[in-house]
Each structure stands twice: as structure tokens, then as C-alpha cells.
Image 1 (tube, rainbow, N blue to C red):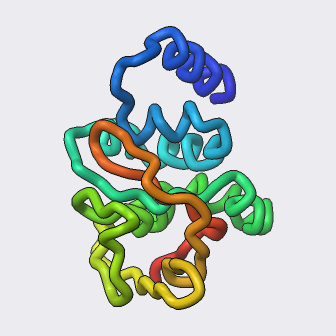
Image 2 (cartoon, rainbow, N blue to C red):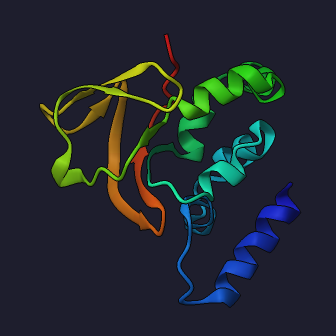
Length: 150
């Protein structure tokens, strides 16, 4: 898998100015290796390379590192649960930071995320640490914690 990610990053660097989808944008950023691995394991890469648009609340490698290793390994092996967790991080449409409002927002998974905007933007219990990373099929907002559907 690491070879695949390295090759993908190399291919992206060679592509230069070509527009990047959400997956390629995340891989190129370098701090979403676990997310890329999880998307691959869940079979969601092609979906997030699709036309979208999507808004993805992307947990960093450090966010995934907060999950005990045994729990993360088990999650990566349970495709149904992994798919539910990953699609809980995706909202249909392209929502830029300036358009974020507090309240409930329906995810691709089907449940609702709770967005709060007092003292910074939070998505459930995750803090948004970077916003508006544009991709040609949506936008990525970086979060510091993996959010789990109830």
C-alpha cells in the first residue's frame, strides 16, 4: 500500500497543473496516509474520485493515531463498519468555510453530523484545523479527530 501511495504521489507531482480530485488532493498533502489506506480498504476511492461535489471532513494521520492500534486494525478489516465511518465524514455538495452554519448536516452515511461554530468550527467532537482545500470535485476541511456515527 505504501508503494501505491508513493507512486500515486509521484504521478501527481509529474501531472503538475492537472486538476486533482479529493483523493489525489489528500494523497498529495502527505498527512492523510491512514485516510488513503482506509478509503482503499473500504473500496471508496472511486467514489471520491467521482464527479461529486463532496465536502470531506478529513482526519489527519494524527487523528487516526488517537484510535488505539488494535481498534484501528479491527476497523480497517471490517469493511462495512469502515465504510460507515468514512462516509460519515462526507457531506454531499461543496460547502466552503464561509458557508458553514451551526446545526445538523446529513452525511453520505445517512446520519447527521453536529456542526458548532462558537470558539472555532467543530464537527461532532472534532476541531476543524484547516479549511477550503479545493479539489476539482469538492472541498476538504481538515479535522483533528476521527468522528464515529452514533
